[in-house]
Amino acid sequence: MKSIQLHKVNSLQGEVLLPTSKSESNRALIIQALARLQAMPANILLQNISEARDTQTLQRLLLSNDEVLDVLDAGTTMRFLTAFCTATNRQVILTGTPRMQQRPIGILVEALTQLGANIQYQQEVGFPPIKIVDFQQKEKQVSLQGNVSSQYVSALLLIAPFLPDGLTVTLLGKVTSRPYIQMTLTLLRYFGINYTWEDNIIEIAPQPYRAATYAIEADWSGASYWYSWVALAEEGTITLLGLRENSLQGDKAIVDIGEKLGVKTIFTENGVQLSKIPHQTNIQVDFTHCPDLAQTVAVCCAAKDIALEMTGLESLRIKETDRIKALQQELAKFGYTIREEAQQTPTHWYLEKIATAHEEPTVETYEDHRMAMAFAPLATQQTITILAPEVVVKSYPNYWSDIHQVGVSTEENH
Image (tube, rainbow, N blue to C red; front, side, top):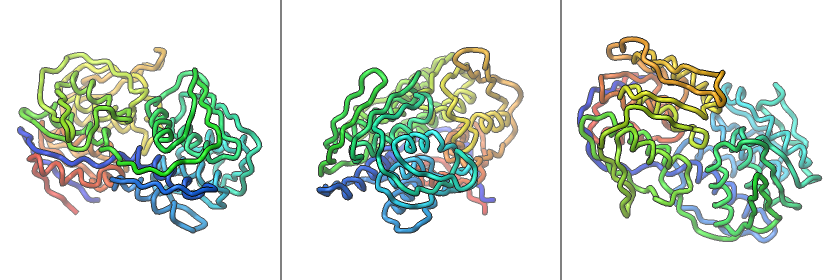
């Protein structure tokens, strides 16, 4: 197995051109593809499409004529393509990696079935691979639990204007990852789609997408790792290019969380400048609307010995890996664990010190890009080795070369 060794570093300085947002890219690509297929095609021009493997996979499969579409390990791609291929009556089998075949798709398939789809499971009920057989809209209303993956909701909203009768989505109970739903709706509006969102009901009538040009913003999820690097370094000033203060991305929450971790954010014309400030000693964070930040924040708090109380981690169990379990196993090498208090409502998780850290530990990544990037900043504390460093291609292909630019020394082993 490949590995990368990161040598201990004290000071970080430099400028980083972040990858662009795969969340924005993936939504815009579906809108672009549907706009080409509507009765009066509209030309949508997208600039700065993400180089992340998830997005490149989606882009490739949208242009493919194959009968079997393999999304690899891209969860968003699986969910968005399930809705897209249904709405466009494309008879295909959607499949993915063994881990993807363990990630649920049943809630989305059930919603599409209510609307009039004939979708067949090829192996286990509720999970990929699935076969899309036929679609003829019979209903225009569906209800989903609001605390499930927002990607199910976004997948339905993206196809709503294209459906003959439009769509009304009712979200039941507490709505999680709300910023990602709002991102979808804001992008739809940018491309000419009107909607209403009152209480927990979202309504979109059938209507054409309009021609437009859109530049994808830099990725706030990718920015979050740099907040951790600056927070943990003895000295550090880093400029991140391409971020917007009026971002659509929920992971912009790292600006406020970062301040608690000891990182000041100054917005500039070209992005943000990060610098060190005093940190808090006790932090409570609700990750309900920004679950992808949890690993980075937990690792950073462990290294800074900050007492951390977390809620909103439920969706981490069904990501690229079981991220809570993976965090528990790898943080133990640094003398920490995450304790779950399921008796509390909502469930709380606490970061706790348990032992002395290993010398020069080796971090497993569990085929999860965020594990690799969240643990890398611990090189500010000691030399560490990270296994399967290539996992970063999923969202941030240039991560290892970017950390070189700010002063981190590495060695790759094959």
